[in-house]
Length: 485
Image 1 (cartoon, rainbow, N blue to C red):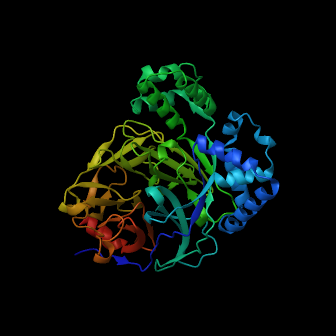
Image 2: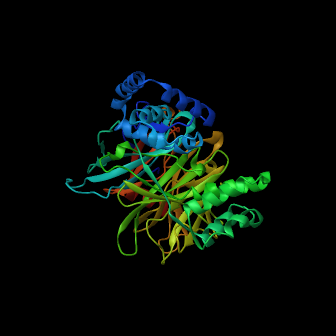
Image 3: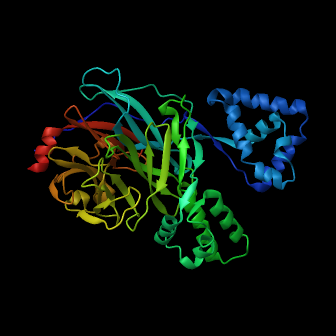
């Protein structure tokens, strides 16, 4: 008999009124001309235009003047090339120039999908059976550019979800670039990226064993300016691309979690941050840290990355290394297994693999544990988030792609001590697109990036045809019985 699944009447829909104030670079020539025009204004005209701009946009963003000043700072190098001192500009000139270097971006105007759910760090002041949770989403706006957004709420004893009010001021994080890099690990990642030693040695040989961010950037820029071949230029630009992939982001503590957006920062993410899979990880000392794996995309190449946080206000972001650091679908187990980190991935794009490692950013030697078996998953199979611990085994929610590229959600069970061993697997989908769920940005898709077990049920958030999201619940006793049977 099929497992009972209850779809909840909750919809997470894209909202085009949620806009972020992004830096806007209009090109060196246009910006140079624009700066000259601004500083040519008389004081009265300048103040009039600045007042009008602040009046029209201040209510849409928190502290818009600080955003303008920050964006003006991004033009300091260009201003110095114009043989002017940025410090000699008046505050009003800086603000108005900064306003021209700013644009509004509707972060979720196109879609809000591929959700992942975890237990919140804070479980205070709740009634019996309630659980405070955080749900992440892949938010997509203009140009199909994806970022990560969050919602917080409470599941009651019956797993009904009560969301907190969503705030409208969007807070883009302060970026803190990683200070120091290990040369040996960096060289290894260059090898994995197939950047030849011939092209990289001119840079790396002159760097110390631990080098600073600006050391590599300066060295690469110097070599790029020396009239080198196209192949070597591309290799050196990719080295800069890699060093920019390590960074921290910090949000203001007075912002609500619904206002925080992890927006593409590095060149490796220039076309989006895709499908974050969040997991509460129990460290060896019993402490809890939240990790997420996601895919960075630059329009040509994908780079799997690892994110970590202990408070959802500061996040550390790092690329994943190793010969298995390719393709998508990385999902970290919530604890070590026999002293090692464990990770699921769809390394070859078709089958499910598992890997074990001493380090959570280094993944080699993938082991195939699952391949398409049933018609609804003949095209490919992958995970739908991190495995869930149960007394009967590791519960892995999967996705399968079948005829007409229809995505369905399934489930498998693996041995706790040796998760290369499959205990059971559903022969039919746990969740398939209903008729009213078939229409969207990408039709005929249900998909998830992470679920949880609460009050005896699987709580499964899922995307509806890459447009919106909802969630469903499944009795765990029924699901485990079907898997073991």
